[in-house]
Image 1: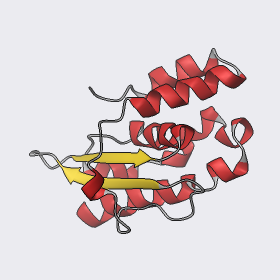
Image 2: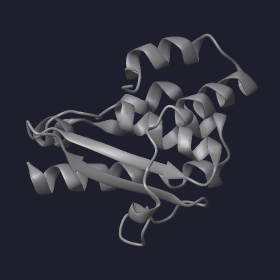
Image 3: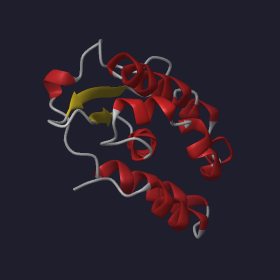
Length: 136
């Protein structure tokens, strides 16, 4: 089941407030496909997150990137799913050219979430971008 588009998520998110926004992020995190424990290694761990977050890139047969991700915290798992919604199943070139931070700006996560929840977002974005640039 593919992640919903960022545009659809934004439409839903804008209709919600406070706790309901947390719930949307938590539900989104539940939509991530399961990440095998064997892939949750130091090499796939995102640095700088208060929770443990892992992101693992895979390549589809046509060369597009598909990311597996997980976190030990429900809200953080939702945030990484949100980041991936901006880029999932796109070509490395497309992902490298995407301003993920700008795509996420309408969600105003820094206002919605505590700083320790959002501090790892730039690192999640950097990992995705660096992977795409390396493979483009």
